[in-house]
Amino acid sequence: MIPVGVSFGTGFAAQMGKRFSSNGVVLITPYTSVFDVAANNPIFGNLRWFMWNNISAIDGVAALKDTCVVALHGTSDQVIPYTHSKTLQASYQGNKHYELVTVVNEDHNSAFWRALPEFNAAMKSCSLVD
Image 1 (spheres, rainbow, N blue to C red):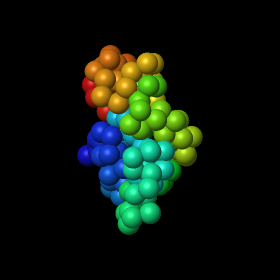
Image 2: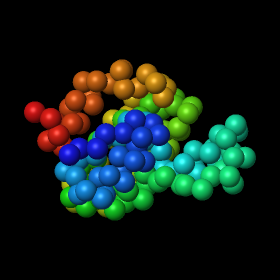
Image 3: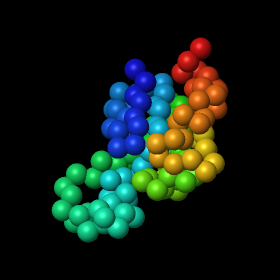
Image 4: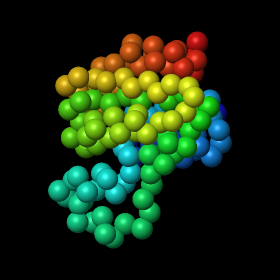
């Protein structure tokens, strides 16, 4: 099983990778934690205090040991800032590698479509596709 998460789903994918010792985890426009996203968003920032479940991608990624991670993020993402991907990459302590596909000047919804060849190459480098 290779958990794949997009945006809000990346927290669940990282947690599943941790729980089921997956060979790989795929995170597209990931976030560190729900609280971090809320804190950096002027609309949702005040709601942070009413959230009872902090679904955390960073806890999942930090616990991965024998799992290769492929992440993709646009540098102009205004929904989940690119810094979340860099923080996740720094938190990874596994013995495989963390492939971060950086898509310059792309946003939350366009990054994946603009970087399909690079994404495919990262998937191959982790042996997640042929």
